[in-house]
Image (cartoon, rainbow, N blue to C red; front, side):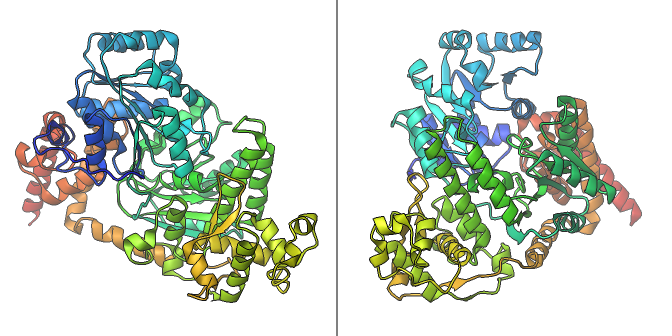
Length: 628
């Protein structure tokens, strides 16, 4: 991570763009430093949590700089939504993509060639054609922004071959800075992205991975249909995503919820494209829809008011889990990530990894080993007896406890602590086995060492002569595996994901081995759902809402927003986010000046929407006064 001292000068036009175009009074944490670096001509990789404003980090410089900013994006739907939102903010932006007719794409290119656009959104496949590159070389490019940059890395879980060609950009446009953005990249992935795109010359900004508004919970899978139904029925009228491992389970989940009167739809790659598009459009534009989906429903789903993500199966790894839970609560209001976790899921995930060796990701053996270790980290997260947010952020190299002074108070472990026992002696035995064997062996070998197994590897390494050999005979293999996972989750052991999966002691682990501290061990992962966490989230949401008297006005403003959204063929949040409507209902602006002070209202939205929304507010107040 690089810590930047970059700040924008007080007279920077970036502040004016932020207020006049986008309607925001100040930058969010991390945005100003990134924007300052881009405006200074530096190439940057920015790792920033979902919902924290990555897009503004390249949109603001695009409007400050002269010339064209290219935005490379992997999904047509994402490009279309962002361009529609920018146009409503009065920004000259366009996209050229495969969903548009040739005539529409040609018209967009004419605007590009005439210098009429500030931003052009384009897919990596279309950008990296020789014809497009030759045409762009003749234009004054000021910046190339790469969204979802983790797709370029073979170290990450979402590698896309078409992104790999982007590594040529520095040689094609040597004078043009590159700005890469992602919400999900561990240290190995960050280094790989920077090496491919910047060749060691760029800067990396990591503003943190925490999504504090999302409550985290994991439950042992028992009867998944009952668990899912109980969960969704307890959240009536809320938008949610239910992730399933298979197409069949996706269909079963949607049918189960629909039979109970809930508005649920399936989404998976086996449905025809028209059905998928229809279901996605309903989910994006209408309230209270639950989407039961495989990971085919993923990147580019930018609906702000998703209140929960429910994993009916174990995700592929920690990065995939973080990406998927990040689709909840993008509006900053309380949301939930709830996961079912079962041994059958682990078996299936192991099988998938073993079957996936033929894709060339750095060699079959290396790729399989790395993916097994990533899965180990997720299992450790599921089994942790400590703050779940600490375990999640620790995986990405972020020390939550040190930065926040204590557990998060917004996960099931913090709010409904599981029963634990003193596992200090067992922990010290495990740590001693790791230390005595040289801190380079994986969990399977450490378990064999502790249980006194007679294996060729044990004999070959002379580990049967170590003091730790056979010290843990009283416990079975599964118990020792769980202890090692929990020690890793508690950051007492470190897992080498980029190497051979060896375990090593952290400083905290060394202190525990020396007798400083204790370790609490959880044997039974089955426990009741974090009802306290749910209650806390519900209470926080209630406190954030309006007074009862203003709720009818908010409903009227939402109806008006939906009308404009349908007229323009865009999701409702592109017109105004919920936060903007809540401010309008609460503050009741009476003129255009007051309307312009509402969060997210820039000059273009004052021009296009002030009159109808002010009229709706005025009519509401007149009716309220007449009723009194």
